[in-house]
Length: 239
Image (cartoon, rainbow, N blue to C red; front, side, top):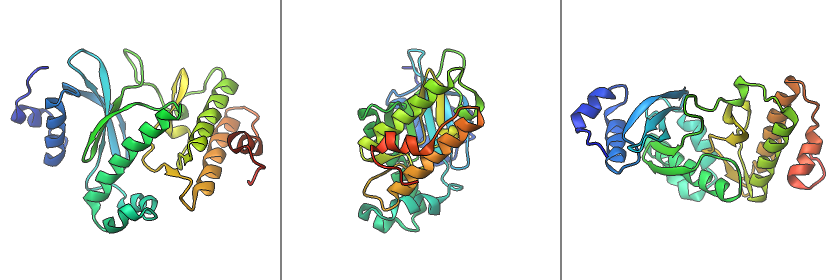
């Protein structure tokens, strides 16, 4: 593992705030990566970067913004859980719990057989995960490509939704924007994922199915939301 002097690291990564720089430096010292390589995705609440490990392999680093994230939207997903009752109005703590939540949701989804990036660690507003992609390019989001085998890919997406449901989970914000195209579909952005104890569980599931079916209809596939609901839940359609 190469040694990165703290001040040199901060100079090279001046794009990050001081707090985030300190977290990244700690993760480097712990051996999770040797240095940040390039941006993968820039979003309203978080940015994702590729990073190189000392063995030359890549990881993905998701960094939540501390000042511009939508704290109220995050808290809407947390408010029903009594563990987070005291977080309202505490912006940074909401983000830190949001990152921890995404880490745990990814682990639970992976254990349920859902295709997701394997989470490696988290610290405050930073999440480190497996890198999804090839030697040259990162796996694209589904919104940016049309799978050559549309029906097979659609069936695989539905199967991932079903596996989440069997594990008493729903993605709760699923669309072509947070499914990666990489041989099989890879679900990402699971921070808002909820369990069947959430009062809006059924509503979120309906929305996820609708979003997925809408995308595949637009690219020319004949799909039926009611059939997808039955395949996912094993129950009569409630759409």
